Length: 107
Length: 107
Image (cartoon, helix red, strand yellow):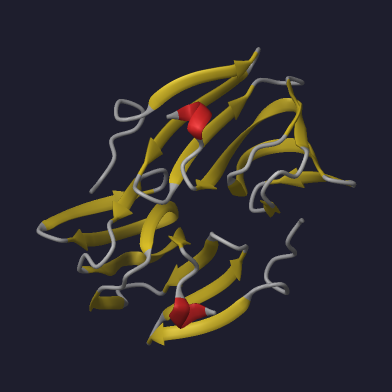
């Protein structure tokens, strides 16, 4: 199936300045994330495995004990139950996060 | 973990003009796809569920009985065992395809 963005997506705001638009199949969830400039996604963890791709802007991402400055085209993996968090750069950030199984909190 | 592109990725050429670079977690596989101008990914199907996002260019994508012209930002779902294929536009296409479980043929 083909999605119409953003109409087909469920919208969530897990933290201030942190907007999520999500769609799911049976095993996969796409989460289109917009972080406002300098906004913070606090450290958290979940059982679902997560992979992501930065689409626009910059973000400082922490995964476990590692921290990196990421920009467009960068990709990452957050294993199940691994602590992670993000701080957007001065121009904000847009990313695609993918979860398997679909993240319970965003269904 | 953070990936270095393209060094950390396995490279495949499933069809002429159709380049895949893949990395996997336990449940997820990212497949960064580059289609040369006017190249064709023939109709095929697989058990793994697939979701995708167009990153650059244009592509005519068929999923089951539906066909659409897609461009940057468009997203889609290919359910397990559903026939799908693609024909790139005159400037080619770059897409992110995601599989769960990781696609056997690309491991």
